[in-house]
Length: 436
Ligand SMILES: Cc1cc2nc3c(=O)[nH]c(=O)nc-3n(C[C@H](O)[C@H](O)[C@H](O)COP(=O)(O)OP(=O)(O)OC[C@H]3O[C@@H](n4cnc5c(N)ncnc54)[C@H](O)[C@@H]3O)c2cc1C
Image 1 (cartoon, rainbow, N blue to C red):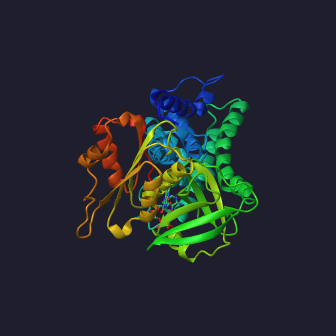
Image 2 (image 1 turned 90 degrees about the horizontal axis):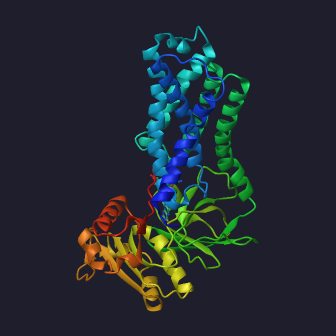
């Protein structure tokens, strides 16, 4: 799907609209007499923060229909950044109220109402904790899996306390239908977590794939091939990815995103990984016959049917490009593809032999770029630069779509350079593997 300003504005508009729904409910029908400006402002921030926390559950819920234009990585970056804004609004809500009217301190007094004081104190800690643990997960020494569990639990707790608090205060939520409406709208956002974590794996449990092959491409790079068990395999577009779970059940904390590396036309599906941590290091021990569950496909890092491909890939980021090139081969597609493939040493290049083969069957140019080239290396050397991109970017650049996937610094250089070189930003697609 193509990027457009119109589509972008539409999604931003929709987000702003949804973030005012609880406030809208509060201001519908009979509204109590206005108090001092800062009190009303503080209350409004509370309602907006509640809506934003609810929307966080929607944005992070891996719903393929949510802004497919922008790709999952961009959506998750948005989720992280807007989460900071939601935290600021949520903390500003009591602070402004306390500054405007110190009597509100009684909300935190356990001798006035023990449960209210307890939950409001706990939710404040939860809001700070959810933000801090997301921004500094590694400093907290939290594994990705435990962080995800903590993140989900805290977010549900925050929304739950937010609903209870607004209903309990009820200044703006009389009559009863307004309380019902808030519970319904915010409860729906909580259901989304239940749907993602419980309903979706439950529906998926009847669709196990089996590992049919595990190949060591080069040291520490493994390709897993899987086949569906008596059902039609997942359809995907080259460049997309799936969340994979390995083992007897789809209910697992260990669920990881991987780009499809195989052709979109192949009977089997394959993924290729670089050993990074506990999950990717476990691939080499996985036995044929082991069950694998897929959730997806996701992502919009996919070629349009009408344009040539300019692929800027680094390291294991080459996997989505392999799917694109293998699909071009299987479709006998005459389009031109240029692959600029950066890695550290010659020994790190995965799929080198296959790329040479592909060169003979499709209109493909491959340029290798090595940070530490061997003696006598004739390809490009060093780190990716704008000059290098300029050298290989075709003159008719408007006929190409650019795809960038690799280490973050390389991606940043490529993205900015292509823009400097006059490539329309709507023709530059990125897929970031490092999302947190
Ligand atoms: C859209 C997308 C496509 C990807 N495609 C590939 C691919 O084709 N080949 C490949 O080798 N890698 C791919 N990755 C990266 C891969 O998901 C991580 O390397 C893997 O999850 C690391 O898990 P680990 O337990 O081995 O390592 P860990 O040491 O646990 O993690 C290393 C880093 O990977 C990230 N990570 C870990 N677990 C997850 C998770 N469940 N979800 C998201 N990020 C996580 C974190 O940033 C973490 O710091 C892709 C990532 C994304 C977002």
